Length: 349
Ligand code: FES
Image 1 (tube, helix red, strand yellow):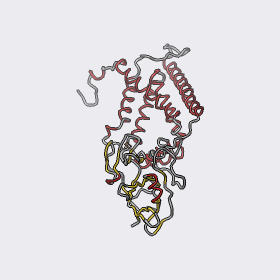
Image 2: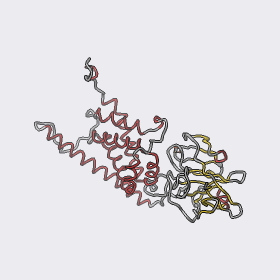
Image 3: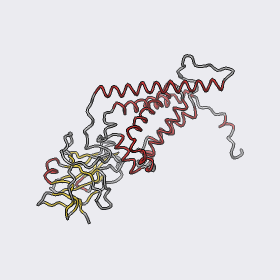
Image 4: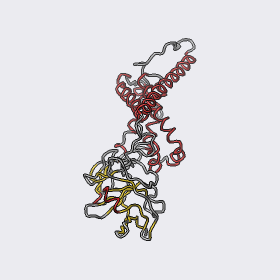
């Protein structure tokens, strides 16, 4: 066998399309579901929500190898979120119906690799993430084709004939057109349904995966006892981020790390200050060390929990990991508490 040449056995090998049907339909249905789910989800486009596309962009910007691209795309997060949802629907329909099949499968490969480089990038070891298997699964489907199994035949589509190449081009264009139309109909119906439901946007500010803007004012009205701290001016002791009485009432209070905070504090990150059982206070970066979702405080269990994959952290023990996939504790922020004034401040060296 000479290098650069495939052995005859490999060259003539074929993958039965039948054997790929489970993969094809599972991926297809899952991608349709994922796309519709995004468009139906009132939180997806709500910048304050746990799962909004804007919030996810902010997390990706911190951790993805595509940081410059993510940064450039961030102002268009809502538009891109919508396009991603529609692309997932299109890819899923293509896989299920066989329309523009290879284009759809290549699209699925690209989307999954994009998710791997953003959403799954911080998952270690990599095999805990699911986007890479999706990417290679889609690649397999793109290489294998549908084998003419379960392919939707469109009426009026030109048949094989003397002008085979022209016919194939026409068939391809028609299929892409039908696929785009079906995607817009399905995606439009999902968006319409969401607006008809008129659900209020998510107020689960205790579990957002990303930093939100610096917030001043009203306490958290969500079911979580955690509330949002007012960022107040600095004092000689540090940067005031909360008040003792506010934290004591709620058990914990959220705040945004001030931009003026010294390294290694990640300025702009969401953070949380917790009252410990002995009456002292501890503050932590609120971004989960697994994939960056925003942790919230469980008042009953007195622990910090991540809504995404269930990581739990012990605030009484420097946010030690109690369970779940988080690889390390939350970053602890040094505090200075002035009992006289009630100010809780981030220590400034
Ligand atoms: Fe996965 Fe927190 S992001 S457990």
